Length: 139
Ligand code: ZN
Image 1 (spheres, rainbow, N blue to C red):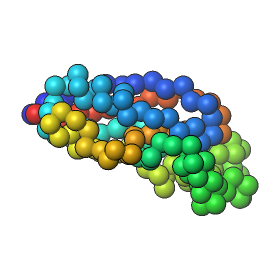
Image 2: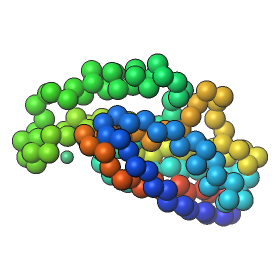
Image 3: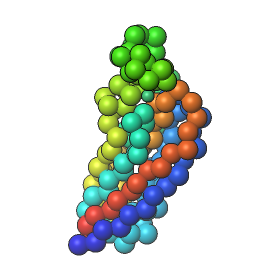
């Protein structure tokens, strides 16, 4: 059993920037030498998320639109009142989308559907420098 870890950096453009990180995750799996196991992708921070999506222009608009309905920006958030940083909706969205994802590794490949990409989702209200930890586990 092997454990291989790599941290990657991302520069995001601000609110609901959706970045396809599938190939970068694939590179870490390849360098790990693991052919069967799992890979975990974890974003550090309480206003970002990791998920999967079909990375096409329609859905890249649909996801932000639906997030706006689920946790609208202009609601009153207790977080705003307490900290004054006006990103209560960002935190709530991050909790709902989750901060990590685990994907099976089968015969050295990510076990993903053809139209299923791994994405980092920036949910904060401003551009950020982000770190994502990729951990490959297996043999
Ligand atoms: Zn905050």
